[in-house]
Image (cartoon, rainbow, N blue to C red):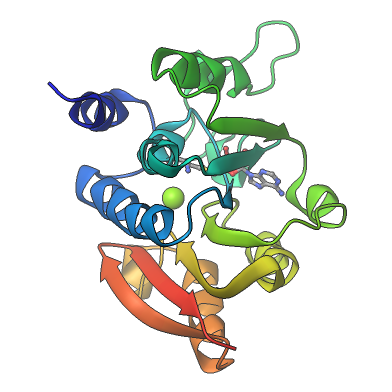
Length: 211
Ligand code: SAH
Ligand code: MG
């Protein structure tokens, strides 16, 4: 089996919220970016246990791109105890908080992507204020609360290069399928004239920066 097939199969086994078809689409669009712009800098907001980082990292390593994977690793609102997406096995016995960092590190180590995927551990808005590197690819998959999603959108999308790719996860047109904020920021990206639609797969939207 090729390295690529191994990585994509492995990604499918990692704990997370990315259906395989969406993961493969994420990978395919990242491959296009890797081909067009070797050596570029990429960033994803929302690492969790590293599933999307493997799909993206498998593309990044084909042309020496670097993926920063940003997360405070304590989970979003919907991941906390009592909420729909709570997972007891991710709780750190030391302080009772969720901590996905050890799981993320293990995923990236097993995938042998430690020279391609670099963890940025902290709050998105704090890191954004001190991050000046232009991004050829930005994947927004962080918190879905309205203020959190909008802050990610407003602080990070200006860093996407002209012609660069913006991917947004959990975009649901129908409110019955999921929360509004990712859909709202997707609409704003399009309606602002700064981004155009390139493709979609499930709840994944792919856009390109044009202005
Ligand atoms: N991309 C992942 C899933 C990410 S889940 C995968 O494919 O599996 C969303 C993540 O966003 C959670 O891990 C949560 O800790 C993180 N997050 C939420 N709000 C954040 C913020 N303000 N700063 C940094 N990370 C945040
Ligand atoms: Mg998601």
